[in-house]
Image 1: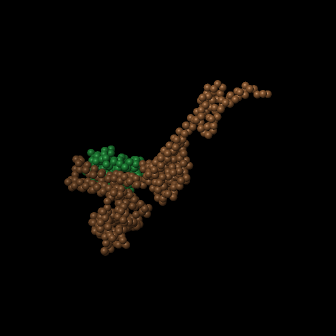
Image 2 (image 1 turned 180 degrees about the vertical axis):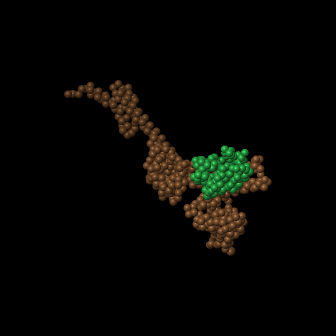
Image 3 (image 1 turned 45 degrees about the vertical axis):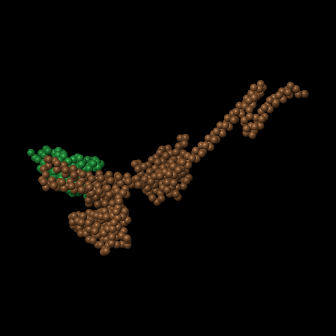
Length: 130
Length: 441
């Protein structure tokens, strides 16, 4: 029976403490993780590393999350990677744009505990071997 | 032919009877209608005539009485009206609002003193078009609202009351006396028997309220934006600590508590800064001027910022004139001013460069200059650099944690202390911020 060990998760988040605890929590669950602190780096990593899922912040320096998502979808290698947006309540307008660009889902940061985020992400992942 | 004796007698008889009328008409001729022919009403031959005269006299007397009463009332009324007018004028003049009335052609028919004060005595001329004396600009536009769509025109043509206030979607500014200021107004059409004969325009300078309202909005907006990240940080780390499914090493637990502590500190700092800004905007910040040594304050600021200076491998050079003398200013203000300018220099400097702090006497002032070699301020952002909540695009790209309050607060504090602040900057080369503070006399 395959485990989540094989899942690769990319966290794109400019707030270091928030990125850190996400990485800690997913590492503890057996994920392989990587981190980018801006959209530009996030895009490069997504295309070269091909994660199974991306957690993507919206407001970031250099390139924001919406632009990164837009650009990701322009590449053949980036079309299918599921992206879950990490948003704030005030980002509602941007979430609609993002969903139009093919974001998979969004989580409002302040509504979720860290364990709930892990559970939610795992529930979104396809069962290995399917 | 001899006159018929009977007829002659009869004529005399009638004339005799008619003589009863002479005193009555004689009096009437001089305006006295008190005469009467009441004794002759029963007369067989002329009774009808006398009754007619009697009725006429009585009618005239009644009419005169009515007229006299009306005239007395009118006199009384005009006294009341004069009183009312005096009272109305007193009320209109004591209003804090400006009030002008216009006729249906929009020409000014009345203006109270506050209106003249707000619009300018020399501008406000009775009988001339109010729309040119009440020139409105809407929102951020520089174009005057044209006469055809001027609210006074609209109120008169539609017969509708038009209101613009703080909560209104339309923001109107008056452009008079070489100044542009936000106004609130109520324009009420004046109607007489369903016809619009003009309008009353009541208006007020809204600058202060608009500023306070803006401060309130800004603070809510900053609070909700800037507090979010530390709040989420606390939530996630606290939930990580209490979640039994996430096993944490003791070392990790300590790290988590440290993160919660740091996020909490960020919130405390932000709340302090917000409070400062709001107090500054509301003008309730008390300042305690004292004799200060700028060098000592610089030392404290540099000590506080040592970790950031070290992180970026920066060198701080001090060019301080000796003896520099002292300034008189509020210690907390001066600390905040230097701390902010240095923190910005460090934040926006390229790594491994120099930050040069210069302090020297210039006439009755001490000039402070903080110079960095770094990203600088783009040309297009220069005019707004001291504006509350403004952050240049390149600053935003470099660091997402700025509140856009620093330089706004610094400028307010410098000016409250009787000093001046300005800067020189070239994008991708660096910035120099200058502050002058008055020296001790």
